[in-house]
Amino acid sequence: MKSESKHDRLFPTRHLTVSRKPGSNDTTSLMLAGKWLKDAGFTMGAIVRLEVWEDKIIIHKTDKVWVEEERIITKRMMVNKNTQKNNFPKPRA
Image (cartoon, rainbow, N blue to C red; front, top):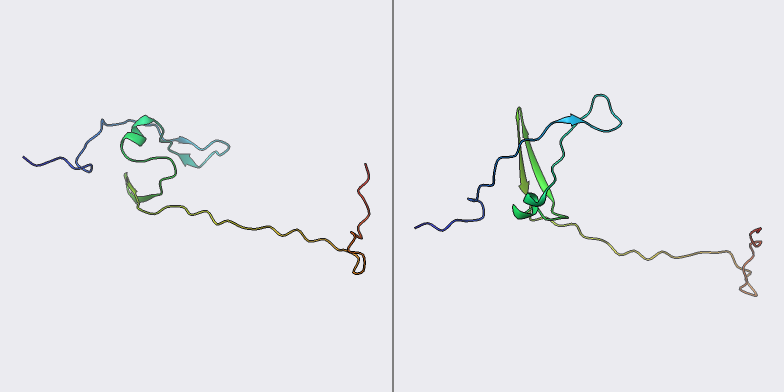
């Protein structure tokens, strides 16, 4: 007997409505939401690839991940060369 892979599992068919994007009169929108997305392997933060055909959209989860780059912000200020004190006037209260 063949074992079922995760790609063989069929979830119940969903029926959604294509609607108007909020704030737009001519841009259509389709929202997917529900516990079933996670159950199907689409966890939060997953990167997906869409194949768009006439009358059909296929969504594939990719093996790509977002990587956050840590950045150090350096604060610069003008100081007096001799005293190393800030030359800027103090802000008014």
